[in-house]
Length: 483
Image (tube, rainbow, N blue to C red):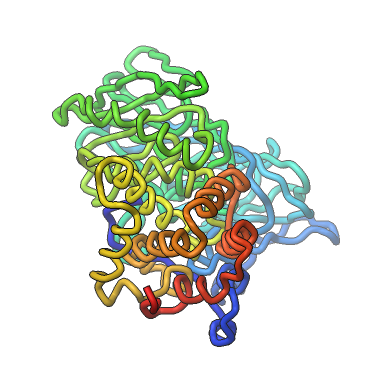
């Protein structure tokens, strides 16, 4: 994400910092769920066995402890949505998941809209709403693979984040767009709304003919039937819910191909709001930027690319998987930033929201890399200027020690995050840093990551004890000295 002024957190043990230890595990470990969430169970239990229990809500995230459910892991979402020009939707979402132990009940994250029916493995299930939880009691306990289908409809809502900004479903003059970081995905489809549970997806959206639909992954079908057209998008790579996207509107659609040095040809779908121009320069930059980043971070992780550009009024750009969304025409730095996220944030996703600096620090550092290779200041010079001129509020809270979700997108997460990477490059040398960067992207491809894992890799590659370095740069709310 870029352009939005909001921050992000991580809890850290003060005693560990005082001892000068690397606190990756303490900083990234699960926080207790809120007392309200801990005290509640899923819907009134139906028939159970001794081994069956209601799955506890919440995934232990340090900033959003009530989000998600720890009793199962989703493997695939199938979303079928019909949009009317009135702004209302009717939809069915099928969630394929696996439970490690028998569950008498479980929850999905879902905000607003009206649930009409829930089935589990084809049988009607009881359900109730509890805030943003949809609590489901299947006819019999589930274990192993199970399938939940939710039919629902109404007018989707926009979610208000802890910092007062908005995500989720946005109504526009000619349609609607869903941008979901950090938790807005639950405003338009029920899901396990935590970044650590990634899944593939199919999205089928039926709209009045004349509107276009952008989504994640590959466009695998577009069928007209009378006065409506159905667009089908398929996401074959694991994706966190916050990276999902749909954008419905009157778009000019550009289909092109990005060619890579090894002969690969990547389909590129770009959606541009009429009146903004063809954006030929921005579209031409996409393959150039991807090749530049692929050389540094390894093979582009997805099966298609592209961008969505519209005057949405949301105030930020977002790295939605495959196809970032831009609120207005992006400059080069913003393109580099959001495309860099395809590796750092999308392929490698933080297991905890408190590790968001691993997204934003790397994407912001990518801007410096591009500038340094295209006539701008060297990374060392960019670091020196940013370090010397940094405002005092850049240093607190520390990027891996957030405690308030309102700090999720603070300047410290972005700018101190990339300063940390530039300082690490200076400490271990350009060669070892390049190895760290590429190995980091490759080792955790399509997975979830924690700060502690990055610290471990940096020490392994460099052969140095970097505990004091990372304690100063990531966990201490003051300006690191000696630079």
